[in-house]
Image 1 (cartoon, rainbow, N blue to C red):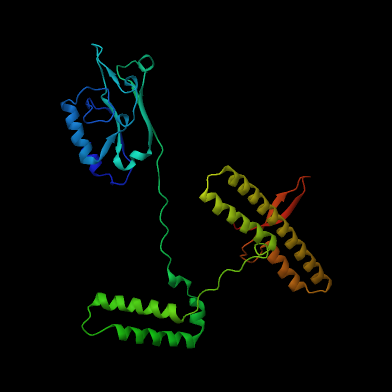
Image 2: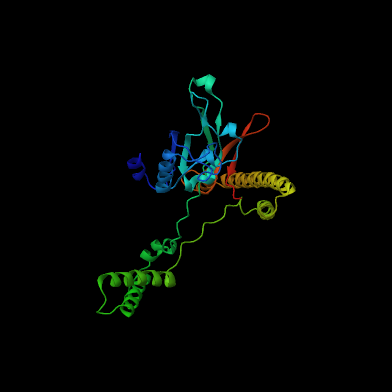
Length: 304
């Protein structure tokens, strides 16, 4: 067992359950039915210390009838069955106890169970990389800007380095020069434009109200804030639907006018924009059923 545990990474969740034939006394376990620690119990303590483990069924205050797990032929009751986990995960254990199960499993040992809800941390977001914000396509297309950038990087690099620098320091100075000059003089990628629906006044006002109530709800556990937030989210959905319907109606009127005036190319361009054909727009038509069974297209692009 030691060999197996040594090959498991320290941050992994590990559980060991079974009859360990070891008794832990009150001096070595918070809650136990045993009077003292026996020889096997001492070996178990060394094992627990070596691999940073804890027995879950000695962690909770229980009556004696929910602690002992074995009944000897002479009638002696002892706690020798354990569920072990790593100390790192001990806050994930919600409960652990023994159950009277002799009649159902035909054994002199009782069932020991633990309720464990893993407390997992969200993975950290990677640090933003400023160089990715540079509009390199624009830099490559502009020959004068590219030339000026190259000269500026060279000048900055020459100022940072000397003939005595080793290869690692020289490379670090080169990277530093490239990044500093790029962030100082090169244009950044344009921000993504807001869709007409997201920029609609009804949607903006409803979204601000949701953000305001959400901020208030985080500072208070009052149930009233939860009801307000639910109502505000419903109003935001209604605002999106109204803005979508208005946007679609405006596009339909525009397409009709372009068709009447025989501006077919512009009409097809408006149709492609509305349906998402031949483009990669932030909004796409989605079928939403009406109450009477008809199906109408609505744009779905929501920002909360």
